[in-house]
Amino acid sequence: MKTGQFSNNKLLDMVFESTYYGIVIVDSNGKIQYISNKYCEFLNVERDSVIGEHVTNIIENTRLHLVVQIGKSEIADIHFLRGDFVIANRIPIIENEEIIGAIGTIMFRDLDDWNKMNSHIKEILTKHNFYRNESDVTNGVKYSLHNLIGNSQKIQQLKERVKRVARGDISVLIRGESGTGKEIIAHSIHQLSGRSDKPLVKINCSSIPEHLLESELFGYEDGAFTGAKKGGKLGKFQFADGGTVFLDEIGDMPQQMQVKLLRVLQEKEFEPVGSLYPKNLMFE
Picture 1: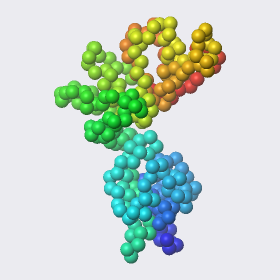
Picture 2: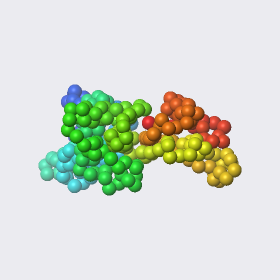
Picture 3: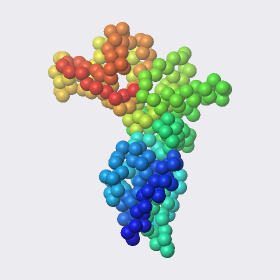
């Protein structure tokens, strides 16, 4: 690549920083020559530190360096980036029939719009069975919003509420009579969230004997009690760390356990049976 072909960053900033795009330009070797400040903010990197770096070292799952080699544009491609699906465009830069680089774009406005777009993409992918083959193995998700049958205004409002809830890191209480689809709602919230690549752990609180409930939920340390597994055991909460816990029939849980569960939900920490110190969690 000739010196100076992509060197006028000030001009590029004037063009791109007024848009809602994340922009990156690489040379014929796949090394970053320009990246917009908005893209740097999203990637949580300093622009000066990434200029000159190979794009694969900065942007996960990128194909921009391959576009340079192949010379074929990739428009509206689905790109998994920082835990979310985004829409990416990759276009080779050609001068005198020679590929001298490539430009990649992703579109966003603010974090809320970004999350809305991500939920919409995931919903479309689910509709076309994108997740269906892997979901049972990887994260326990079996249902999506498309399993919630109905076209009434109430159903549409419920689906929109699920999409909004899925974008936040909050605890959700799902109420309804038996057979109304509470599990479908729980699965859908997980699948549309930023935690969808982590486990969805389902716990039927009424099916676990009371004397085993604490160790099942929180696990136990080595030697915590007679017959305890050597090395201890992970509880379901710790197994779901970073993902989602669905507590079914939570009203059947003993009050003593509900108090301990409240601490988990409020403080994001728990104590395995026999442990001297609490452990922190990141689940919702």
